[in-house]
Length: 106
Image (tube, rainbow, N blue to C red; front, side, top):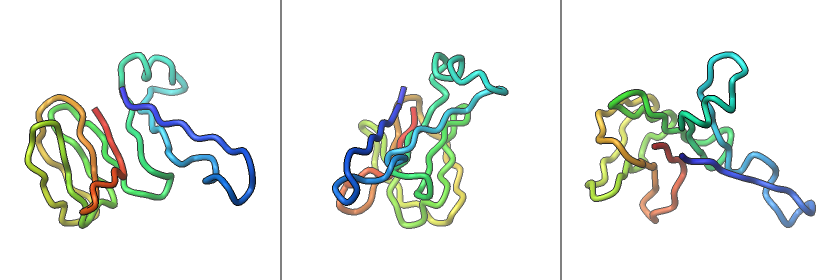
């Protein structure tokens, strides 16, 4: 289950809180239930690309030009700001051409 963490110690030396950002899909305020069910995703920041699992698909938000990648899978170039792709179970992530990860889901 992807969970990102951020902290903040000193102005100018750290990123601001929220980098990375953990996203949790929950009913109402049942965040812990959603965490137990692994309905989470992580993005590099609140405004950056996001990758969400929806059944046997992943939904890529604001990921135009990034590469969708999974273990043992070929990279797929994302075209557009909202793209849905059928994917095998397991972790998936969005990376750029330098292999910097921008978002991930399971």
